[in-house]
Structures are given as C-alpha cells and as structure tokens.
Length: 201
Image (cartoon, rainbow, N blue to C red; front, side, top):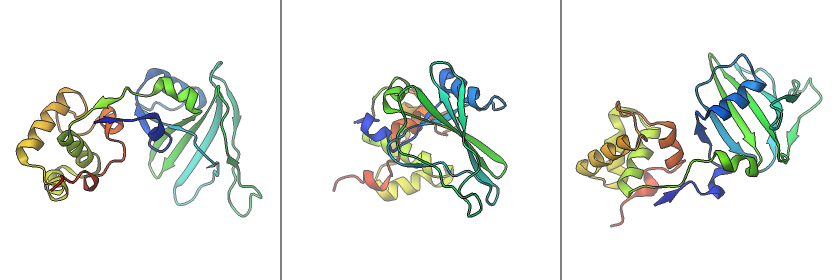
C-alpha cells in the first residue's frame, strides 16, 4: 500500500535530516545543531504564541527562502499581560517559519512551509505490506518489550509475519539494527495506529 500522499502531509509531520532543511533552520537559529527537524505544510490558522510556561516555550522566526535571511522574529505574546495573540492564516510561497521549541531540558526544531515549497522536500511514496505497516506502527508508538504483544492483540499478526516484516524494514532502512524506527520509517507510517490495521476476519 502506498503512503504519504501530499494531502496527508498537511496534517502529518515529515521527519528529515536533509542538509538543506537543517541549513534553513540554522539560518534562523545559528546556535542550534539539530540532527533532524520536522516539516509541516501550513494548512490553516497557526498560533504564534510565544511565552514561558512550566519550562516550555516556542520561538518563531520568518525566513526568506531565496536569501536564507531571517526577515522577522515573533515577540513574546499570548499572556494576559502582552496585549496580543499573534496568529498566521497563510504562508506565502518563498517564506518559511522556523519554530524552536523548548520542552524542559529538551529542544526540537520545526519548519512550516507553503505546500508548494514543501513538495520538493517530501519523501517518495513507498509501498509497504500489511505486516510492515503493523510493525512500523507498533515500533513508532511503543516500547520494545510490548511492541509485538500489542500488535498481535490489535491486528492478529503472527510472530513469523512480524519477524519477516522487521527483517524487510531493516533492509529498507525504516528500522535500525537495534529495532528502533528511523526518520524514513516514521514518514512511511505517519500516524497510522495498529488498531486501524486489524486483520479482516
């Protein structure tokens, strides 16, 4: 079954280590050294609230894709004391929003793009067997010790099918040798759950 049509990308993140995407993010936040970032197509109103709360905060910067220059930074807003709640409805072609997120001691990077600008960065569509989809869905969301048992309960997959799928996915580089999921694997399965992959009776 083919996955990752463009219509799904507006809702699901694309995980990438593409050097162009990393360079784009670093142009907005030069002190970051992320090994991967998430990509989204801006598909509707987006809050640009930026303030500290319980160790969490998002910072936003607009970047010109032609020059790589930051063209605007979003000031603190969103609290009752700021007098503003910034929101963006559309993003013109040729510009990106880079969002740097603090989550306690962790950080992450996200790039929002117009769908036209995002298209060249999309991974190719892939064909996955049913068992491969089950394996990826379980691996993405569960700890190693409970992946197969949970997948078997939800989908009725057999151990032989599971092991064959794991071997195939490792060869395709959707899983690492230690069984953890790669960015390509995350992109291939999206937000599909094991429950939605229940084998037909």
